[in-house]
Image 1: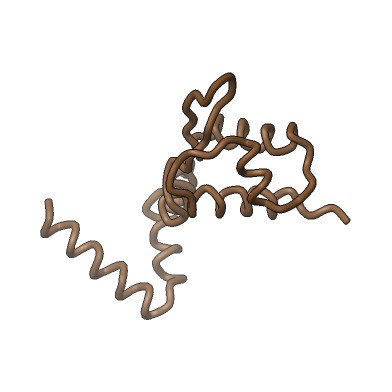
Image 2: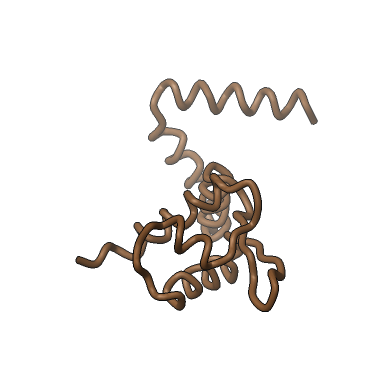
Length: 119
């Protein structure tokens, strides 16, 4: 039974986030514990690298990969890119803030105050 592609990508990212050093496609394939074709893992890693999600360094004749950011950083980047695409940024931010829970709204206020104090 095939798993959804997004699930495999999430598993690859989880492995890289837990790693203490860059990993080769073979090391990632072994960590996944599945019998995947070498090209499957390499294709996923190459695409994530092209998107800027992963960084890579030479490892022999191939590459070793590491996450460019943690999960929170990746989510923040996606949010920022979505906001940058919208011509009515104020309206998007207003709608976003109005959809937050009370706890999230308070956390956002606290973080904004902290960033002002640090500036």
